[in-house]
Amino acid sequence: MSIYLFGLGGGALAVLLIIGLMAFAVACLSVGGRLTIGAFLVASVFVVPVPLYGGGGSYNEIAPSSPVLITSIVAVLICLVAILVSNRSLHASLVIIPLGLYLLAGYIFIWPGDSVRASGVFLLACACLAWFVGANLFEWCFSVPRAWLITNLLLLLVVATQTIVCGFQYMEFSSGGGAAAVADGVASDLTGRTSGTFAHPGTLGKLLFVIVSVSVVALESVETAVRRVALATILCSFVCVVLTQSRANIAALGVMVCIFLILSRSPERIRNREKRVAWVFLVIAGLVGVSVISARFAADPNGGERSHFLQVGLDQFWRAPAFGVGPNSYILEAGAYDRLTAEGWPVHNTILLIACELGVVGLISFALPFLASIARAIPRLRERSLSGSYARVAIASVPGLVIVLGSGWGMLNLYVVIAWFMASGFIYRGIVAPYVGYPDEPSEYVSTTVCDSRSAREHSILHTELTKQKD
Image 1 (cartoon, rainbow, N blue to C red):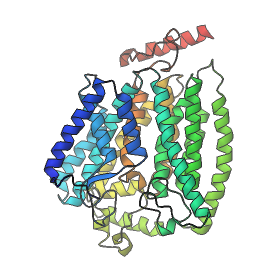
Image 2: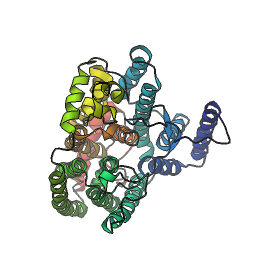
Image 3: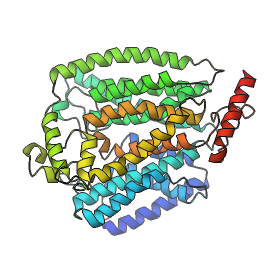
Image 4: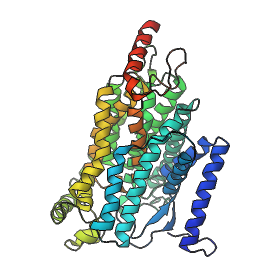
């Protein structure tokens, strides 16, 4: 999994990487290349995250047995450098800081300092940086013309790529050709389930859930092109996730979109046909999804050894309930007491896995930014504004997220957690940013300038009065 350039050692390669990151970020900023950075970020996170340096070995949990650098982490670092040198006001997202500090303190003072735990700490620390980057990318996104359209076009391109790959995989399975040779192939016990450019169908399904959580907001846009692009993204995502035959991901995606459509409050002056089309397709996809889920339950009613893994996880939690055993070390520790776990099977419950590895203190730190998002979203649920839209998607995603977290550990996967935290930071900033109206509304209708948070309520009242005057 490692790439060594011209025989350079790790230190020299790291120095060259840092210099390259800074040069690329500054160059992109100097030519106004936000789209370049955004395209690279989206492609590296959601299409083909490739390991570049480190990792290796047969150990397989949330991360390899030693720290690994993948393209999605490189993309986050590029964005971080670009944000820091852009001379713009930074939005620190203080809610993510407790988790970062806990990881640092735990690695220094609590957990053994081996390479396995170092790999887990590095991954989760990069996830914290991804939250920070996502929060600041929100400001970048809506400070240039037609940014909402460009953002959704990039997401549609990702989903369209995955749909095409899944289509070819499905045709190969249908013709009896076996697993498609994409992204290390599909394991023999997953034959018949498409995985796109990833090695496991569940990974693709979870990334689609993350993508739709960002894209579905655009169904409330006042611009027809933006709504149609978002609708296409959602429809392609449903096709993909059904082809993966992932029960939890199908249910989670359907529930999130359904709740968002129920809560949705589009600007009163537009006729939103796209939402009606989404409802129709949601019903059709729901019927197909139910048949797929039923077939999966008929073939595997108990979800494999999940009940056994759950008991192993509960036993392991009580061995170190306060601070856990350290990130990425569950298999190492619990495997000493259970043969199946030692073979590389962690508990299929993300919340319990976090509790086992980080302890109760770490679980609270991990949950804090998400609970803060919910708390900040509830008062803005009924607002007809960009912030209101992100508040609605934050609430709508909760039941789906509970389904995904309670049925597997894949949200902490090396290829998923970076995307999850970045999108969550983006949504959190969308909720708390005191935007009035939507970024594609005419300037004479309502200002979309970010105002001081203390005057956000006055601006919201002004927006409501302007709406009544126009109507």
